[in-house]
Image 1: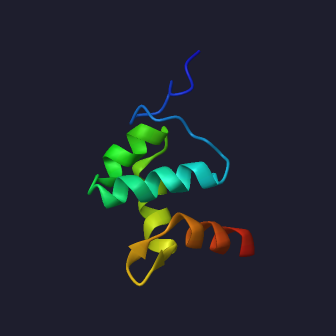
Image 2: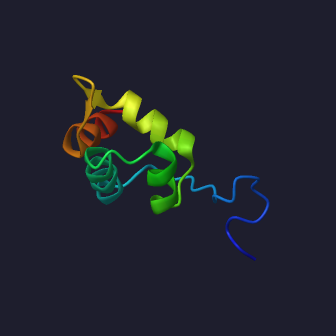
Length: 75
């Protein structure tokens, strides 16, 4: 059974917080102007997860993995 089975968008549901490594990947892909959909596909996460991560953890309208990780640890 595939992890993505039963999900209409083909992306598995991962119930864990993003890791620092995932946040670094998001940061690098944002710098390269990748879309949320492309980032989500690369990480195996949903597009809404990436959108929430970027908007919730932006600092001065820019995404930083270090800043995002600090905010996540405070929650």
